[in-house]
View 1: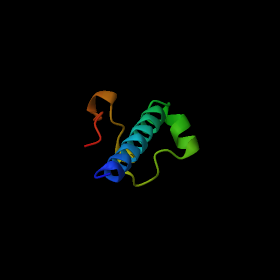
View 2 (view 1 turned 90 degrees about the vertical axis):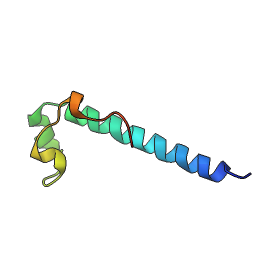
View 3 (view 1 turned 120 degrees about the vertical axis):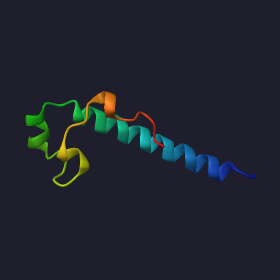
Length: 62
């Protein structure tokens, strides 16, 4: 079919991005002490420079 491969690839990418956003949101909702204990966020990552509030994070992948 003319676009099935493209559509299925986009659907997989969308699902992975959604899972990644959900995991990141869950991790950022943990207390800072727990985040530090499990190594989240990794040193040098943008999140380690300051915790963004939920209102500043984009719910969109693009």
